[in-house]
Length: 283
Image (tube, rainbow, N blue to C red; front, side, top):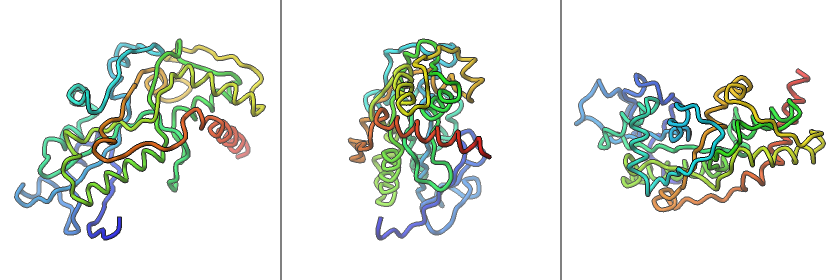
């Protein structure tokens, strides 16, 4: 992004923290102001890029306690934009995005709904995602595979580097002051395929055996409550459906995924989790 003349300010704030959101506006080197301290006429356009989790489309399943079952419901970020908008509006955890989207003249927002993310991050602190690594860790520690219920539920997935490239494309759109990719046109479902959690375990277990880390091919069926006792929020993130189709980023930002698939990444996930378990045991 050569020729960048504006400050880029990133502020990690929870999507539920409404007071902090009222309102950091950025995108100019002049100042960062609170909305309540100035009039609309004083405002310059700012950009707010927010990352959400795909459980936003699984709220009904979570409320009903329906885990490990299949669903024929899928969401395309272009075709189903009105339905997706209604889901977000109805979700109390999305208060920040709902608030920001009401002021498209002063804040241009993008909501990136992350599916199952895999691959090693390149950041300075946490390089590990949650779902596939956690299931792998528990498989190795418990000496057998696991799934919630029948494991028929499906999540879409994306490599962390592909997700990063989408965020970069949004930063570049902000720098170029493109106005067509934000707010009502700014909900993105990055993905590069889908996989059921039952099939995820069916691939983790034989790979762990191949690496001489397991002696059995058993995959235990556990309840949502048991899953939550093993890992925080496991029922919501391993037991629901989040089948997403990414059309908007390709159409508006010319983004396309190029990373290895989740199945191709499983050998590295198993190696990494086995190494981490050994490292923790020696502390």
